Length: 415
Image (cartoon, rainbow, N blue to C red; front, top):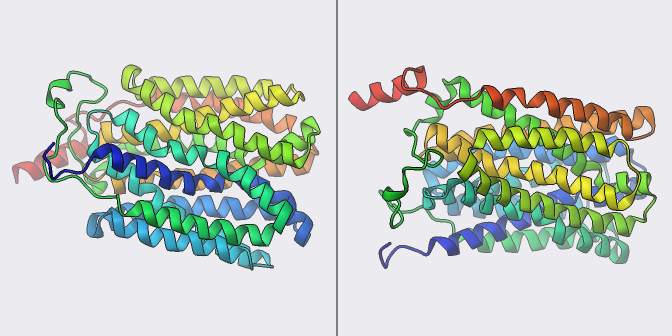
């Protein structure tokens, strides 16, 4: 590393802090009951604001990945800070459902998505020697965001009301994301950390040929990775959307205790992004996803049988450990298959799986909860879905030179 090259660990630290602010969206279940009581909205109506934010997030991440190629990560992140902060603050003065959906769901969700892809794509280029580990680091803050936000939001709601809480948090999100944006830069052309070339014997971090987005979309593997991310995300985000009310209903704890639990179980989300991503460098991305789906199936089944609060919290934490592991591992999985040059757009488009999961998972659990009056039945359904999901990563393999996408790369190189 030359004296003019920034410290890549400082860039990583800024990326984590940015993701902590973005991950506050996972504390949404704390707002669910106060919003229903304040405005008389139903649970599915309030849940839809969160679902919409995650849906928009997925498409905005793709747009952010494409935009980064033209203007760089800093501009994208600064623009995102304005949208995220403004969307959250405007939610505080939204007294109708359409306005809540527009402000928090569309504007705020767009800001989260634009910002989310920035540290992921940027750090993959700074750390080609530790793809799994650094993507885990890059998104660990997102998973842990609710740990900080949930109890703060509950305190603000109790002391100042739900509307003022949105205003205060929105201002804080803007300041944090905008400040971290200034650290987001790409490495110089041809950058490689000291000793990287000597480490390429590891099959899990060996570089793939760099494919464009169009070439990646020409391979079936891209769609297999998309489906893997969708299924893993759907399981975890269903729990995130209902964690607080589920604890209050199943274990009969107070709203404050349930809010504290939301923060505590988010540790699993953050730790999972680090743990599974680190492990994937050693045992491979496919093995990690197969393991996570198996664990999720067992835990959902156990959840359907318990009402003890401590056991409930532990099991929810394990689900979020696997949920976070998907986001920690998938960027490196995609870079293994398609290279890191255009990973912002390739993985950015893949994040639409997260968006669709953000609708499917919460809608599934909210619908069955409303229809049956309890959570246990839908948890058994989720156990079956998780078990069946393991067939998707089982079929995945790295693109071979004979496949159309890589033949296209070779043809362009010869040209």
